[in-house]
Image (cartoon, rainbow, N blue to C red; front, side):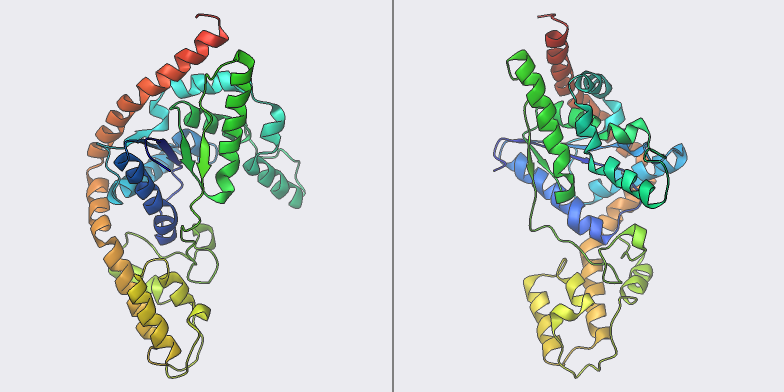
Length: 339
């Protein structure tokens, strides 16, 4: 389905990624980009720093988060010589396109935005006014996201189920503009949800999340990773008691990273009472370290040589801007009658 298609993925710099991010979002996004490129398509990958400032106002913190997310995608295998890898704020056409889109975006669409509604619900639960703490960046977030998508004539946007709305709003806005001017000024993108992407449990059984404090760190040293893995909740049953693997949290996390053969080995050992919790935690530790060892080395290199990453992002912006310029020019010609 990706043959000859333009794929676009944006990632917000929100802090140091963990194993769940890596297996559930970062690695799949890179793999999808490679699939598109291998079949003659294009792959755009951008760091959404304009989106990030809605919540993070400290420039020092913001810059560190940007460094981390840029380095982890490069460490995970993103090839900036093939994919177009850039920073959102390095594309000045995006705010201009966003401004034009505002004029064709019904306010009702913004009222339905998941992010906005979630904050309103949170305020109501706390007894605060609906709009307490809500800035216009958060409220109009979907329109900026639409500009990010539409600027590059994107065919497919890989998203999680909770992000489908962003692509649907981009389609709605593009459709309204195309209908008004009786031609396809903007390509209407499709979303792609990979049903096989891993949702990795955290060490307490809930979804792995920094907000829960239940993560397995990604690029820390082996000792730190081991400490996290050995804190995974288990019961007090002895090794020789047969166990259902699907009831064991270590096994559930292992599913996201192990080969079928490795998973079979752990499952059989638990069912037959031949593996204890210490054994399977060590098996998980080995799998995690084996998975991230090369990427960790690259990550540490890029973090220590971020000037090289800055150059990559700048080169990516140079590649991305001609596409955004064409879209902006097409829109302005139609809107202001310059044709």
